[in-house]
Length: 202
Image 1: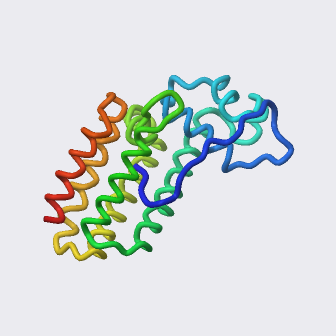
Image 2 (image 1 turned 180 degrees about the horizontal axis):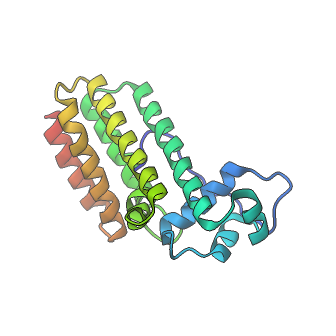
């Protein structure tokens, strides 16, 4: 799930390790490929194509594919924290805050390299978490960030039942991520979000 006002931009892709190698740019590109195809279905050749680095350079910079995937998830954690912080700084009334959060998140979920890709954690890490303790821990951290930050946003906006409403809002966001990958329309997703807003904000 992504919220707030920070946007992601796909970097220009070139072959070989560029002179000004930028870890953040490479992780963004790798994360987008993982977000679309998942961990198991994304090959090193695809990651090389996405990032513009050859396979030896990827190994040198990040280690194996699993290490690169974990680094992409860690980058998502940081992005979430910054995005929620931006929404807190906006200091909006409850309804307006929820509407902005849902609208932004839906737009992100509907983006992707080859169609709506949802959230990298919710739609790819869940498949690996059962058998991989590190990926499971990364997924748990991302869910904890969402729970904590959504509750803080609701409380800041004056919701007296912030603790009770936060997991409900998070659950709706998770459902929207799945629905985006299933091909649900933006209008239909917006209706679900509006129902949640009405329930929480009255």
